[in-house]
Image 1 (spheres, rainbow, N blue to C red):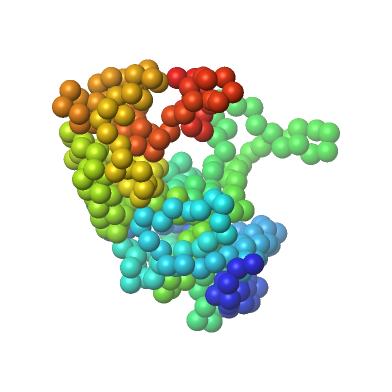
Image 2 (cartoon, rainbow, N blue to C red):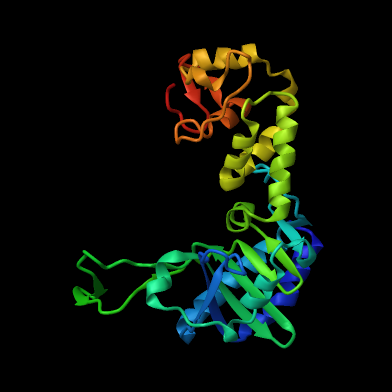
Length: 312
């Protein structure tokens, strides 16, 4: 069971789902664009609109069963705990004009087909009186490429020629937008779409500082920049910085892990400081070491990287 706040959100928003639905697409922006995404609108037929209404009702029902808590940049979901939805007030969101633009799709330009390759998210919007709500999903709109393929529609037992473009949408919802608040169900989506927000960047700086006060990193600035650019690393850094065992990690223990798991020896300098490298094979390595991501199977004595089961 969730808390009363989630049920109140459901009761307040659900009546608006009877209203017409419009689709807003967020496109990767041009350089120096005033908003973090260029927005376009799509009209939809009634049959498709009913599918979006069903998705919205299901999501609101999940919110009613969820616990509502305040957004924190370093939030880490508890996979074993109850479902949680994060509340982020408009005043604490870096891009308030983006909220206003998403929730007023009628003034947005329509999508041109040549723009459809750069879709970062879709958001279906309902408006009823003063109530305006958007249901956002990251990378939800996908233009199915037909170039170089023979494409067709299956009609009973026959393939018909496909003469138009096809777009698919996920029924899932990651963030619910209202004029004064965001309800975040998928914090990874928030970190990905808004990774340049000041709150997230400040949290990265604070978390790198917390780690390097205990475990020295020779090129901490480069490590911090890598975490700023990668939402996955950003999330893992927040998790690592809160590990209670961090203070007990020594250069000798790190060297033992490097030797025991055949990791690149240059990740630990002769002076006992970790060294970040931004190539694909090394960029995650410091976080994996500090996250204690290497283990030994008690069954076979083989060594594995956690979550991969690949021998190392």
